[in-house]
Length: 557
Image (tube, rainbow, N blue to C red; front, side, top):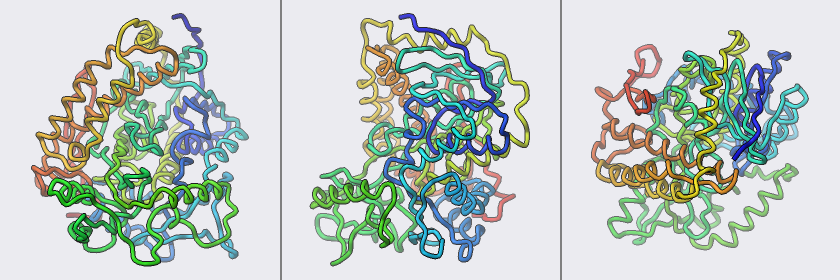
């Protein structure tokens, strides 16, 4: 099929129109008003991503009660398990109120009390949450438009273009009419989200396509093994149960939460998933939740502050709670695999190992190493997802403004043409498999938590058999139309993400933080206080390890 070719240019190309991409665009235009910023989004910028899909909460640290160093000590020991970049985490906590104030300044509705203070709900040791209206991304898009940011919606980035190890731009295609774009840019910022494997509905917008593009372009990946987040969900309704791990009972009525935690923690850990699995294989399932008389239980209702709700999303929350009350009569729970893989490796300036290529938000959260041994947000910290994206956006904009853009690299049109041929290949096949068939195989690998969360070598090998089959079929996918073509690209990204997860998981022979191996149950600081770095070298997935520079940071094992 022949589709029109178009050449475009800009100073900064932003791939992804969720909260991260929009926040970066606004921030860089505030710092560098004359910069030509173009956002491409495969859906519609302002309506895409996960920030507006039902979460809508911001992590909060009370500056009068919480010192950044105190939270760092808690996080490093109880969550990040000494694998995190402590400088990055300190900076994130220190900028907490600044980020919330920025969102409010940009038009995001954040409830306040009669004294003008944010309404805060305590959630755990040193942490709290503030609710934000679910139209937050729309409001930030409006701010970006007023500042002159350009938008190209319904347009999916397909590949990154490089020249001599430096970013030159990207290719993209319209999912409406197939127009193939070659976009020259002095810098490219990836804000394309994490890999969520299309299992959990609220999270399914994270398709990993930006991660795959960065990998193909030669960017390093870090902490790919920490892409296995799972949340307890009600079996009957599939509603997620936030903080439900504190109230777990087996079929014999035994309180089993005590088997994996002694006190209330910041959020769900993989030990809750492990306990569910152990109970089930020992014939003590199903697992269910019990709450004391008059206890409202966990979930969205816990986020209300008791005030009269006049927010944009109050009707949504009302209907959601009504639906939950009607369906959730049975409190049997099981793990819902979500993923949250975010491995694009970035430095403190959010630049990848490819010059001129930056990655922010959920595509590089673990790759930044800020959280340590835990998957992308919520990362055992509710409300950290939105603010991590804003944090990375502000840091990225600050670093680009400080360093400047330079002249940029030249587009290699032969490289762009090769990308075009590979992109449209599924549309030219008369025979082949569907994207859904490939996706189903990957889901068979990652969805069972005994293969992805509480791992063991033989179970990982079983999962990899599905992934290898998916890889074989991915080269034979056919597409009926442009939307089907997009699904093929996303299926390829899903296969790659699963490969990276199991490749790195087999290398890390220990258990640390969220990462659990039944065959290596102990944390091994002598041998594995290291980051695993994956890289595409001539089409082969290779790895190196990098020692965590724990000696220069304040919290040590």
